[in-house]
Structure formats: structure tokens, C-alpha cells
Amino acid sequence: MRRVSVSQRMKKMFLLGIIMGAVAGILFTVLIANGIISNKEETYAARVQTLTNENESLQQEAAKRGAVNNNTDLLAGNEEGWALALVNESHPMADTSYVPAEMIEVESERSVDSRIAADLEQMLADGAAEGLSMYVASAYRSYEQQRDVFDATMRDWINQGYSPLSAYDETRKSVAVPGTSEHATGLAVDIIASEYEALDDRQGDTDEQKWLMEHCWEYGFILRYPQEKADITGIIYEPWHYRYVGKAAAKEITEQGVTLEEYLGE
Ligand SMILES: [Zn+2]
Image (cartoon, rainbow, N blue to C red):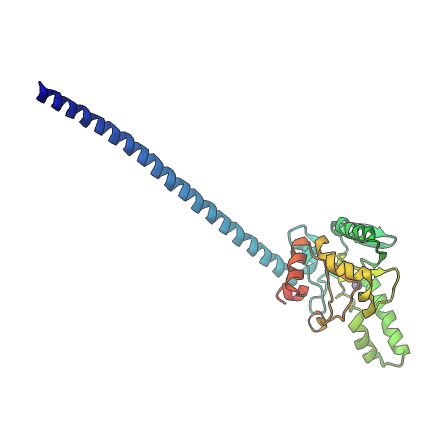
């Protein structure tokens, strides 16, 4: 009897062992499988993140290439990167008759590309709320208007006794040659302090410009022609000329302390 009971108990324990083993096995498998799946999910999520980042930086690179290669096509489109269009002497407007599809008058006879109007108006309003007094002295300029400004400035130099050729060279330093002006994009504005309206270096010492230089990036703008960057931009220090590049780029350009040319790898 005792032996039977022992063997029965053994049998029970054996059965129990098998059941426990099976349960443990199932549990183990489930846990491991879950672990593997969640590991896989993590790996997968990380991979997706990496690919997303890579894709974003590629898109950014593509936008930069586009910004450099066909500025007016880029401006006319609504694809990402329109705000990065590069216009300077070595990258003139591909189409000199370009006019922004939609413009908004931010002040009397001062119109900008409608895509930047809200940010510009917000910047001016926030500046005014700080007790500053400034206004947009120049915004979108057509090719013809730019030519008139260029001719008028050149005439001033000639009247001062300069030869036409040296008058042209002097003018180029402060006025963009028609077709190479950012004002033709509708993304650039000249903002001037009411208390000091002269367009010279001292404009940069006004409270208005100090505030703008410090905060413009928050609204997607950059000071386009900073001091000591004339060799890169081709334009002398212009503490009044602000260019919209979009908030992300404005932040990066400001943080890196570079010009738009350098940012675009030009
Ligand atoms: Zn300007």
C-alpha cells in the first residue's frame, strides 16, 4: 500500500511536473516572444526614426540645392524650401519678371509675399509692444523698380564726380544690380527706426535694430547682410535689411552665425 501510495504520489508529482513544465514553457515562450516582439518593435521604431531623420535631412539638402539652382521656380512653388531661395550676384533671379503669386500690403505701397505677411506683422506688432517705433521702408520691388533705384544711386555717384564705371562699382556695393536683388522675391524688407532714418551703419545702433537683430529669427527672419560678411554676401553691412527664410532655417542660421550663402553651402 505504501509503495503504491508513493508511486501514486510520484505519478501525481510527475503529472504535475509535466503540467507545470508545460505552463512554464508556455509562459516562457509567451514572455520571450513578447520580449522579442517588443525588442523588435523598439528596433523597428528606432529604424523608422532613423529613416525619418535621414529623409528629413535629405529633403533639407534637396531644398538647399533647389534654393541655389532655380530660385524663381522654387519661389513660385509651394514645396518646402521656397523660403530658402537664394538671390545674389552669382545667383540672379532665373526669371526677372517673377512676381509673387499673392501679395499683401503690410504698409501703404509696401507689399510682401503673402506667405510671410503674418510673421512680419507679428514681429512689427511685438516690436511696437516693446515701445519701439519702426516701419517698413521697402518691401517687394520689381525688376524695373530695382533698375530705377540702381540708376538713381549711380547718378548720385556720377554727380559727385565719379566716372560711370567707378560709379557703377560704388553703386553695386549698396544697391543690388537689377535681377540680383532679394527685394524681387517678396521675402525681403528694409525696416527702419522712426527716430533714425538714415541707411548707414548707425542704423544698427538704434534700439529698434538691436531688438530686431536679437528677435527676428523667432519670426523666421535673418539679418541678411551682417557686419564683416560683405566678402561672402557681396553686400555691405545693412542693419535694416531682413530676409524671411522660415523659422527652422532662421533659428539654425542664427545659432550658427552664418549667412544664407554659407548655410546653403555656397
Ligand atoms: Zn533691402
